[in-house]
Length: 430
Length: 144
Image 1 (cartoon, rainbow over the protein chains, first blue to last red):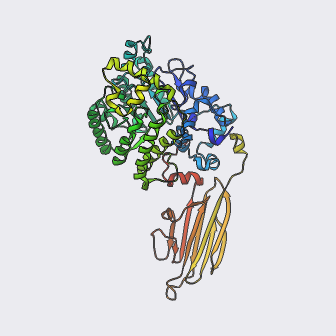
Image 2: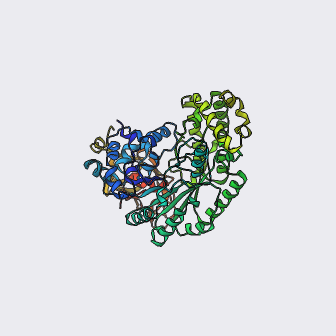
């Protein structure tokens, strides 16, 4: 037991609705351990938050190492600002001075109340992640059918799955209305982050945005969303202007063509054009922009291209966690020789930007004033990861088998994008 | 700490440290810490004060300089050399949050108190909440 290592304020602030409309205790939670007992159709989100998350809160107050928090603990281990550290900071708790800042927290009384009431709380969630479903025009190789309809169709065709996932909750107008009504009853909602699928083309997204505007909620909340840089919608841009603040998450893995292979079927030149449009419109409207990355064994080699772009444009770069699934796509699948080469490249990049390095870990990754330092810190976390994560190169044959199946349908070849990995792929069965 | 109950049962305090030095000639100085006078005489040598403060209480430091005759002496001053809480150096980075009320209407941020008047630094909320805000740590959420 260790309060300092395991405690997190997130379950007093935040909850998630997944694409099936099921409630989850945290956006960063390890999906392997999530209990999907409750959903939007059967229970109000406030009731779930106040009562059904009580056991999770109690466990954290007890200082226990809850397996739901595995991903954050892995990030802490490699000094990547975890969801845990970021949620703690939002209530004034600083890991470097944990005891005193926790006891000074704006939420201390709420933690105390829960501690005396078996984890129950009278709070409402103020930070929501909303998964809109899997409606998507992309089929990223690291994604899954629950998050991409295009990939689901492809998986079914390739017989990787027997059937496509059930309809998302946003395809049920009654549930969408129930969700909007629930949001209007919240007494302190501050932030809502929407993900897809592709948010901008999911019909329910625009419907919800319009409802939040007509209900007046838009004036007091920050709206966040993640988009895949393949679509643009002028009407949505105008709607976003009616929110108190906008946080734009732009998904990209590399500035090189490998991005097209990984974020299939995107075209890097089109992606760069749309990226520029987002930067322009965000600057005009004072919106916060972040590049969202999901480094895999296929893209960690060109991560510096994203870092360089972000550094040049003063953007922070963020990944929610170190990729855990699919297991065979983790960067730790790369053999030592390739790891060493990537390490050299990352360390060299860090070295050339070393004037920006600070001793203190930056947790508030959304502060544009420290974007450059944060990029270096992110690069350092991948250096730590590549140096310390156990070797998983035994998963390489599964990776190659998977890529070959996708390529049989897509008519492309990983060797056209990563010729430097040819020996690795060949010895793994390519 | 093993758990939250253990944390609640632990008494935690802030370490406060102040150091003043005379510049040129001694001046008459009075210092209050949370309205308690901790120094009240001529400052003819450096004065160091250390104390343990309530973790959640406000912090109100006031330094008053009096009796300086500008016709006889226009160089003397009191220098605030150290003002830190839990090893967090408040000066010089956050000098501008002090209120310097003096007989020359000098309002620029300073730790060089060369005029008759008072220099006051008020932290009206729990120190770590204040520190979170002034160091730009982003949102500090409060329950509804």
